[in-house]
Amino acid sequence: MSNPCDYLIYNVQIATMLTGSAPYGEIKNGCITIDGERIVYVGELSNFSGNAKSKFDGGGKWILPGFIDCHTHLVYGGDRANEFERRLNGESYQSIAAKGGGIKSTVNATRKATADELLASAILRATALVNEGVTTLEVKSGYGLDLDTEIKMLQVAKKLSDELPVKILATYLGAHALPAEFAQDADAYIDFVCDEVMPKISELKLADSVDVFCESIGFSPAQCERVFKAAQQFGLTIKAHVEQLSDLKGAKLACDYHALSVDHIEYLPASDVFNLKLSDTVAVLLPGAFYFLNETQKPPIEALRKQQVPMAIATDLNPGSSPIASILTCANMACVLFALTPEEALRGITVNAAKALGLKDRGEIKAGCRADLCLWDISHPAQLVYTVNQYKPVSKWFGGKLV
Ligand code: NIG
Ligand code: FE
Image 1 (cartoon, protein in one colour):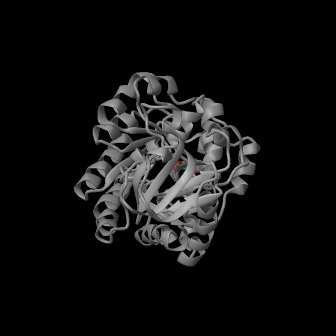
Image 2: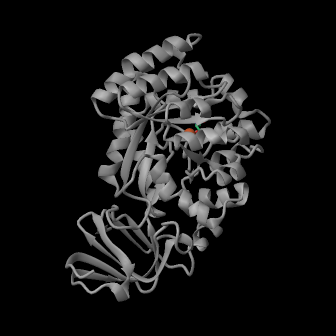
Image 3: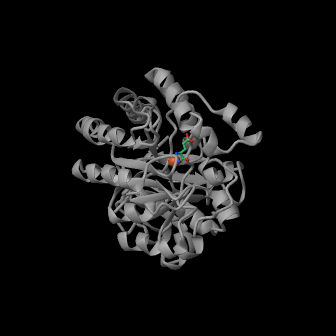
């Protein structure tokens, strides 16, 4: 490598997260060159002989790809602390939802909130993630359910990238809960989602993907299938909340529609894992919701591992089932609760999380990728997931810019 470049980061241990070489794709005493937003060269410093316009000495610290939180609901009004108390007094998540609490109570609060109020509270939550090294973030709608509030939520989500150094992907989650105005007529609500909201959202380019909640307290597989068909028509990629509380075969259905990811999957039987393999669908694990709901049924990790289905980990940051604004805490939970290895957990919030969002240009440190990078004062990458709340990046580059 002898071309001149804009920017050189040197004297770093690089966790490229590429497979096939050392664990974590480690390069000792490495360097990274960057032109504009992109990485140009990654390798050992001794192999680099070019000239850089400016240089950054990493002081021997570790550099990792920026983290990717591929599943959040962080735009919402109000909170659900009262429901937390009700649950600790013996009510279940499902029974609170059946009595009009749960997602529906957040829908009421989100409809009442102004866009500015939603943005102000979302910035606080997103800032916590960004401070921990998140550089790409997915945000779902689904607490508005009517046209105006869904649009308001998605616009607020997109605005986060004007306020913070983070890339946002937005997902339309119309089939999240049945709003009061359609009570008793879920099929008519699905008509509304597919025929009125989705065309508008697609026209305004407010979403990259659609999502559904396939569950007894959400929507049936037949209803979700209608949403998937409409999504295909509008060129939106598919993600799905499936098998969180019961096995409705939602994962198989989503895989039939080539979903990018199926998320939660605690109740996915090991014998159904091959469906994910066939459709190249990522398994998104949400240990924060598992922890917060005190769930005992664990996702089929061993089968996912055996069949080499990529596993991502996300916060699921939301007011009801996972009020946890920390990607590294969720990575730690994936290790402690689901027995992922630290390397699997870090792959889960980098390369596999990128895949869960259909992004090919990030999550690894290699030529051509976005230069979303974080420098950490650690002696080994496993330290990031074995500890809780002990490390923050010491330097961050977002699209090649030191922020
Ligand atoms: O991912 N499962 C559905 N949706 C969210 C929970 C939303 C809520 O309880 O407000 C989840 O867990
Ligand atoms: Fe979720």
